[in-house]
Amino acid sequence: MFVPYFTKRHSRQIFAQKRGGGGISTRGKIGGTGINGSDSASERASTKNHSKVKSRPLSSTSQKGGKDGGKGGKPPTVPPGLPFAGRPMGGGTRDQVFGSKTYGSGYPGPSRRGVTHRGFPFHFWPVVWGGAAGGAGSGYLHNTEYGSPENSSRPGGAMSQANFVSNSTGTAFHLLADKSTVASLISSIGTNCSHSLAEASSKSPTAFNTSDPNAPKPEQAVEYYRASSAVLTLDGYNNTATLSNDTNTPDAPLPTGIDTTLLNCLNQTIGFSVPISNAGSWSAGPEMGVIGLFWVLSCLARTLL
Image (cartoon, rainbow, N blue to C red; front, side, top):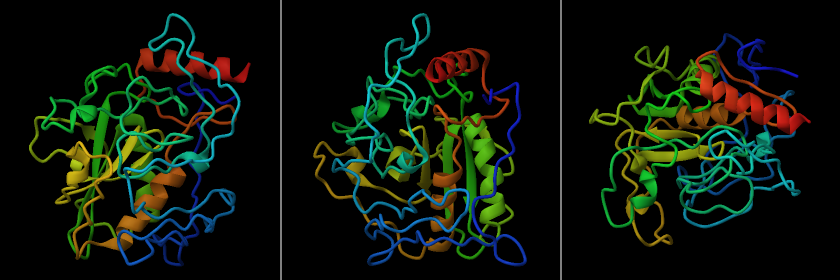
């Protein structure tokens, strides 16, 4: 059994690299008519370690429900005495990590808006945006049951961010998740996407400060992952569907002229490298808070019994 904090697991390089370093080989490009093309569910990653994981482009819709291929069966629950006791946890698999632009996506099974009262298929808690609702349709974005972004009790530590800037167009993306996840993904992205990254890109996580006017915002989300516990955002994107009462409102198209090569690389690398916890594996870093560590260790032990 691999135990976080006490045992070290080296992250595996999951993409075939181009000769000369930094390249990425994957078939999961953004397809269709360009930026908002449809999913290519039959395409698979060109990688030995993840040969059974579906390569996914960015979803063309985010409001519709859809099945992610749940495995069935009743999952274990969070033990008594821990936060969210009795909620289902564990059982999520790598091929269920990809979500869409909707907050509440990236869960196994049918998708729905929001994260209220949901379980923890990957053991990590959903990202929280903080603040108060900014409009009639945006209340679901400001759930308080998981605490503030600064809550260090969450598995992986308090929420953090990293920025990734294109060296060709200046397009700026942000990754938002717990500190341990962000630190892990900075390393993976640096390996797989170095051919597209500007020097200004993050080398280490920084705290997610909701009072910063330049901080990532929910309407900038281009993809959620791992039960909405990680999200990729795009500076300058304003998806008004996120703030609408009408869940059938289509997503706003991404801006033209952005670096889609970097976007595809970020999307695939996050999906295939984001740390997950299930009955068969665990990956996390030392930034996890003591309470969060105890929560995950207890859940993981129960999963493996």
